[in-house]
Image (cartoon, rainbow, N blue to C red; front, side, top):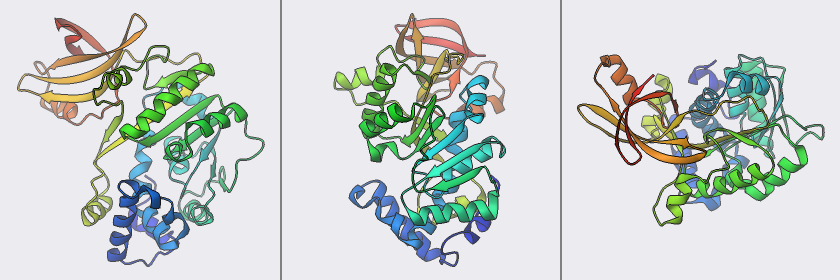
Length: 345
């Protein structure tokens, strides 16, 4: 990232907040994201809470966008970069700045938020750190926005699918990207979005190989099996961020999320398989659950990935892989129904 945590702290609405106060506020905010969701929006109207939220969640959420964009084809990435991006519910500019990071400043982003304090905070960060004149923040969607890229980061689960679809129909974006909390409740909403986007003529560039086939995780839920499709980003953060995480007792090394990318781009390439769950590691192999397309139908398979022939650093890398990555593979042996021994290539 383009900043250290100490630099970000200088841009806060309340830059002199003591560490003990920050920890107390973040504990309160995190409860709003989980057990006390009725109070989830309270923090956006308080300068201290906006500051504490920004200090912790902005640097830990920024990497989520890179993870998602890394899964997309070069042609789609080029189309996104060359479009005007609308970041709806931008907050302190988290994902607007994530686009800046990924495209090295060569991108046009308009962040929209109804909170004046969030917009003030976002402008502070842009003026003092990013200094990107192609990024701007507004209280409402520009009337000229149409046929571009619409992005929502942690916003769809609050506005609801119906309102989002109405917005899609009104603004007719050629790309829609969402990054939401990785919960089963959000998954139910995303399945509904998936169906509606198919009806509107979109393709899914991530994570589904196609959206004409039912989602295998949704089919399991219909049978009473608790399952939902989500990704898990595994990573380490800068030392300052890790220290703050330890103080407030919020682990951000493994971050569940649900991300979907829809596009009108016809040149995108669906992955041959996508990791949807880590099952186990044995002395001889890794067992992963994957989603792949078989004759036009999405199915869950178990891949046994053999360790034989892998170097130690390759094994360590596999131990740290995130859930949601695409896989290219060679089948070594069919072990049973929907169960393959494979070699990654």
